Image (cartoon, rainbow, N blue to C red; front, side, top):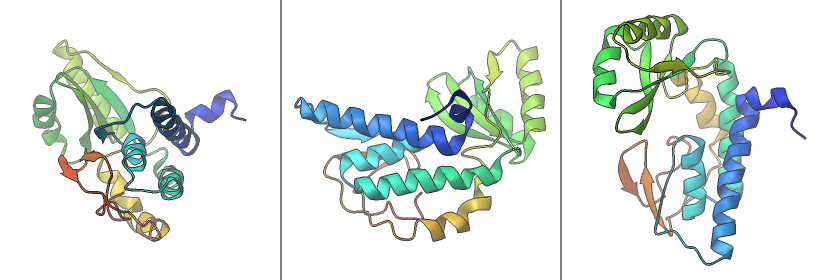
Length: 192
């Protein structure tokens, strides 16, 4: 049973969200709704790989559980912020912070999430505020997902996920990491 504070822990919330995604796909399939293609971001991409058949349910669960637990090592070193601006414009802006801020997710044509060093994000937020750009910090997040900070857990993840055995996808799988269609066999430890 999860308590209210548990939803703020990445090692709890990411596996829960993944389980909901995979379960919804199974429910839709039970009613005859078969996807032609799948796409996801972060734990959503792990769910997409599972739904596509590129990862077994067991391997996908292992990836999301171990990856989210490893992210705990980054706690307290980062932050994330929503920015209502096109990705290319934000990428130009964050270049001035020398890797201390990254575009973590492209949410839509005029919406991104950035992550990185908390001080750098505060500086970026202040500059955007002066220009009237809508932005706000993402509450409860104290790590910089999808930024250079994640490189700090790369070796640990390679070791933890060495047993992952991907296979060909039975459904089209669009990789948000590579911005390309993948057949599924490339979704090994190094991919995640």
